[in-house]
Every structure is written in C-alpha cells, then in structure tokens.
Image 1 (cartoon, rainbow, N blue to C red):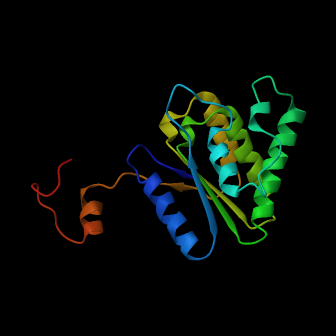
Image 2: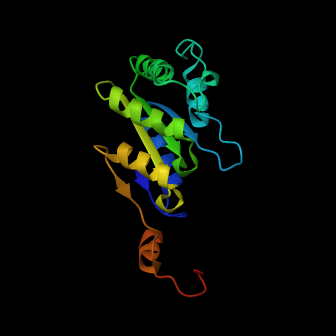
Length: 178
C-alpha cells in the first residue's frame, strides 16, 4: 500500500515497479480508479479482468453487483475474480496494481481486501496507491482494514534539498520554481 498527498510520487512509483516486475518476468496488470461522476461498482477490476484474457476471466459478471447485493452474491463474484487471479498466477507470478484508490467505490475496496486475504498463499501480489486526505470516512475505514497486515509506504513530496539531491546538483532560484 502506497499513500501520499497529490504529487507525492505514487503513480510514478507504481509505474516503475510495474516496469521492473515485467522485466523480471512477472505478469503485471495495472488499473486505476476514475475521478468522475460515474463510479460503477468494481470499475478498476473490469480492466483487470479484461487483462486476464478470456481463458481465465470469471464467468460471473460485475453487472450482477449493486448496493443491494447479498453477501452471498458478493462472495461468489469476489471468489470468482480471486480464482481467476490465482489461476493466472500459476504460469508466472502476478502483480496487480490499482492507482487512485481514493476515488474507488465501496465494492472495489471490499474486493481489494478479499483478494489480499484469500490469495496470500499464491504468487499474487496486490498493490494499491491513494491520497489519504481524499478518502471519505467510509473509505478511510475500509483502507485501514486493507492496510492491516500489509506492507505500507508513506511518501511525502520532496523538499528543495531532496529534489536537488535527486537531480544530482545544486539548484538555484532560476532552475526550480516552488
């Protein structure tokens, strides 16, 4: 789990991690939540399911999920998606990264937690990134549950000295505008 304010480097870190994992032979799937008025249930997971391909995609559709879905319906859908991830990871380790989780719907957060808990004995690694200041109270509770037992990386924006060190030299006022 990676968290930081806007501009803290979350997306860039996930991108670099994905590139290095892919270069090492890991199957890598990336997705992100959408900052728009339409937050369909499991929207970031639709990209992930599609990326798995037709041979491993679950036959249970995300269109069966809505706010009135029973716990049993959610379990069946979540288990089908998790099983597809585990099956895909049998050929090569699987890395699934979801960015901008602060824009996520409730069902996506529940599925992140479900996948994290139920795939831990398989070569599946799930990573998420979010802005803690942009979480609603409900999302905060769900993200806190996701973080329990997960590796956590709390990024902060670089200050002037850190930026100078990163680019390899001293910066004067004309080279860097804050």
